[in-house]
Amino acid sequence: MDRGTTVFISEVEMGQNIQDIKKYLERINYRSRISNDSSTLGELCQHHAEYIPFENLDMFGGERKRLDFDKVYNDIVVRKRGGFCYEQNGLFYWVLRKCGYKVTIVQCEAFISEEKGYGPSFDHMALLVTCDDGSVWLTDVGWGGTAFVTPLKFESDKEQIQNNGVYRLLRTTENKFLLQKLQKTIIQVDGSIKIKVKGKQWKSIYRFDTIPRKWEDFKEMCEYQQDDEDSYLIHNTICTTQSKCGSVVVRGWMTFEKIFLDPMTEKYKWRKETKSQEELKEVLEKYFQVKINFDLKPEAKFEAD
Image 1 (spheres, rainbow, N blue to C red):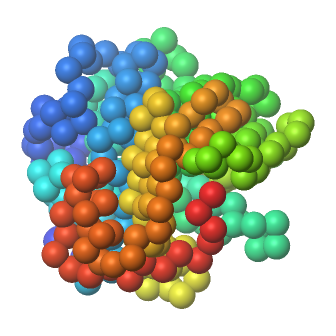
Image 2: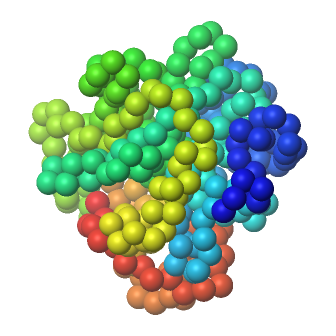
């Protein structure tokens, strides 16, 4: 993909693309005033997470993901589909710039496991957002379902409580940080305990540095996510949204909805394994308003917790 056929975010900022931000606000059902303060930032993130699913379904339908702003805008805003981190946070970067925020793109390395450690550089994309009062917030609308929704204040070693969990940022070197979340108690549909947590057990989500990046810097990893056998996304069909009260998730054949009882406890509202392509597509349409005209390959190389 050469420069002549790709519209990058840097070009959008220079005015070469005039997409309508009003259509985006309609897409996320946002009707409040717009201001470049932390309150507005939090509301925009919450609406985005609730109305735009994190999903990789097109990877199983033969359509390539591309870091092309017109395509991303059309897929998410016009076609009312979702996307993965580079698409979602790339679009959100543009939205926040239009709203008057100062925004820095940062690269992240997702935590895989104690045995495997972290993924490669540029494995994930997040944003550092500066508000009108000078405060800085880690912002991420592209993780999907299990991480923070409203932004985290960019402060080290401070517990930050949200409806869906307790988080902290740890400074590891001068310009590198680690995002962690406290393990939660999980209750089954029937009221039995699936996971019981005693004391504080921190789980790493990803690490990142504060070096400013450009959207196009993630092009190579965007290709990797779609082609490499080690890519998490080509082995796990995912579609998920998250509201203040809970989350709805498709992982492989498994589908479920959780409710947040408190920041340290969540409960399955319902949980079932779909038995056919038709049943899975019905779930996607009912809970995510996503319609697809191809069959999925719903692998899931992890347990749906």
